[in-house]
Amino acid sequence: MKLPVLFLNFKTYEQGTGKKARELAKIAEAIAMETGKSIALVVQAADIRMLAEAVDLPIFAQHIDPVSYGSNTGKILPETVKEAGAIGTVINHAENKRDNKFVEDAVKRAKETGLTVMVCAETTERAKEVAAFSPQFIAVEPPELIGGVISVSTAKPEIISDSVEAVKEINSEIDLITGAGVNSTADVEKSTELGAKGVFVASKILKADDPKKAIEELVAGFK
Ligand code: G3P
Image (cartoon, rainbow, N blue to C red):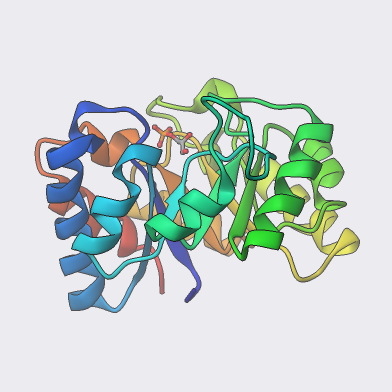
C-alpha cells in the first residue's frame, strides 16, 4: 500500500452502511484516481464483499476474532474476511477494545491468513506494548478526541511524535498512523510532519454534507 495513506473508517454510520457505503466508496475511489493519493476503506464485515467488488481500493475489516475454522458462532473469521476481498484488518479500535492477549492472537491469525494488520492504541505506552506483536501498522488515537473537532495533532501532538519514536525503537518496520478529530488539511500535514505515515479518519467524512470535498481537503495534506 502506498504511503502516506488515509484510512477512512466507515464505522457504523448510516452513510457508511450498505448502499450508502458503496456510494461513499465510489467517491473515495474517484478521488484516489484523480489525485494519486492513497486511500484505504475500513468497513463493516457484512459490506466487505460488496465494496471489494465495487471499487479498486484497499479494503480493511474493522475487526477480526482470533479464531480458526470450526465452532465459533458470531465470531469474525479472518479467512472469511480475506476471501470476501479485504486485504487487511483493524484490531482493538477504541470502540471495540481488546486486551493484549487477544491482540497478540488476532495479529497472529491475521498474518497466517495473509491480512495486513493495523492495531489501535490509546497511548504511547500501549503502542509500545502492541508493537511487540509486529503488526504492519499501529494507529494511535486518544479516545477522548475521537469524533470531536479538536484533532490529535492540535491537542496532543506529542503522542504522535513520541509514539513514532517509541515504536521505531521496538520495530522499525511498523508504520505509525494517527487519528481522532482529524478534520483539516493542516491536521493531516501536521500529523505527517510529526512522523505519521497516515491518518485514520471517520466523522469529518461520514458526517459531511459534501463527503467529496471533505476527502479532498484531507488528502491535500499529503505532500
Ligand atoms: O477510526 C478512526 C476514528 O476513531 C477517528 O474518528 O471521527 O475522530 O475521525 P474521528
